[in-house]
Figure 1: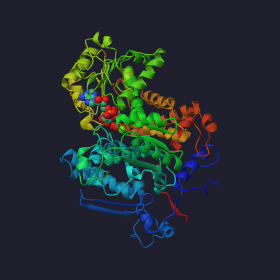
Figure 2 (figure 1 turned 90 degrees about the horizontal axis):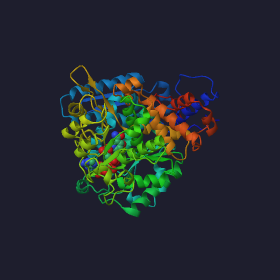
Figure 3 (figure 1 turned 60 degrees about the vertical axis):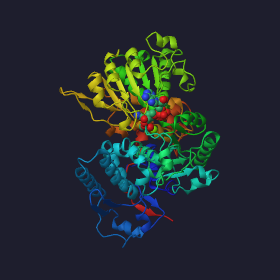
Figure 4 (figure 1 turned 120 degrees about the vertical axis):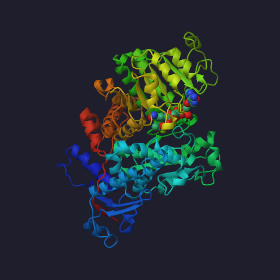
Length: 625
Ligand SMILES: NC(=O)C1=CN([C@@H]2O[C@H](COP(=O)(O)OP(=O)(O)OC[C@H]3O[C@@H](n4cnc5c(N)ncnc54)[C@H](O)[C@@H]3O)[C@@H](O)[C@H]2O)C=CC1
Ligand SMILES: CC(=O)C(=O)O
Ligand SMILES: [Mg+2]
């Protein structure tokens, strides 16, 4: 029965693995499942989902590679005979040929400015992405440590900034203020019947780069690439969306080449009614899809989260994903100090940045302290924004920041006041943790870092989490140089480990929400949850926090290497799924209902999640009308 309902290869693979788990399919076949296509002939060659040609036209290298991976029998089946040169090479050979060309590019561009090299690397990968998705994802997954900095932060920021110039072909869907009233029909223009994951942005706060309008589409694309690489979401079932409601970026408004609406952003009711309409359209066509809000400016981030989180299966990555990753790091810091986790309640934490990300972190940290103490907590959290330390004396504090505004008497008792600057706060508080989510590069300057030497912690923690690299609050090298070798360090974008010149290495953690959002999305998807609850998010964070061994923690390693992102994502996905079951929001997916999910042990859940991850192989293509 299930075979006849198959639409695409994913579905086959998914059903096989699911049914196998429950004993419906007996044997484990090594033959890739067939992939049903509704196209024939040249149309297949032009479709990156099914194309098996390697075509690398690399201007930066001056070479053109062309190879075809369509076997002869398949050429017969699909009407490809005569449309291709005769030689057939394997997927593995194509992979090697691409990697050779990539390595040549690296060699040929050595010594050129970093931005030029980064964009050249992005272009060669992007061309492969546009032509042959299977090979692209094989290359990405197998080299995620090297390629994440290109398809994700920091290079994705550069790509967004230069998007109008780099634009060759659209990817994802674009909705604009002009589409009001028509989104319900426009959504049906998307060619895939099934969508599992949507990442949506309005481009208003792209990394720490501000309002980039329509150019922000690079972020949902990069995030979804991470979904495929880390969570094994099938690339045919992901959908990046740009909601273009204008831009307030003066440079873009004046730029004749800008591809978005050259008008100011919609505000108030006009804005929210457009987001409402898009959410309704998405839910109508794909009621089970998970929707991730990404890089929305502060004034809409919390509001949209509150508006939709009980109605749709959605989350805000900057608020909730970041919070979970940061919290896992903060708990790691306590372990690194050799203290029990319960000591978290005594940690002094200074957060620079009172926006979506900073407040998300404090909110989650506050919940943990409250749970640990069993009371309404008054933790030692100090919040700083562009106007300095936030106290109850501040007028016009945003409601989401208000719970973290310090009592004036409390800060005066340690020589601080409303609006005290970062340096004074660090000097007087002597925090265990200094955490930056301000988007402002370099604010953890030499003086601030030197002040961290007087921290009350034996292992002061510095997290410069803003992206991309130039917006990090400090570099890794400066942190170890000025704050000393005892520190533990994390950054949002990758830095090299630091050679401390005494045989020791200063370890750099990449404190980035990429360690959680793929698992949150995958766990929610497989659970069939109708919402993403606090319990599911908390489970994700706890899973990440407990992933590292004590030995690793002692070495200052709080997050796994990105090379093992698939295994951590499987664990996180399973933790999220189990929490959804416990909280009775799981409705199951496909043949696996909530009862079956509830009967799985922890290990079986991890196995179930892992077996549902897509991995790129050339499936035999079978034509069906
Ligand atoms: N590593 C990660 O996983 C993540 C990193 N981020 C990064 O965090 C940064 C901020 O993101 P959002 O909170 O969404 O932005 P936001 O715009 O909502 O908030 C920025 C906050 O920083 C404050 N600020 C500005 N200048 C400051 C200064 N000199 N000192 C202290 N605070 C200052 C602002 O007043 C505001 O409260 C971005 O660079 C983003 O890339 C965001 C999400 C995840
Ligand atoms: C990592 C991320 O989501 C950000 O910088 O906005
Ligand atoms: Mg973000």
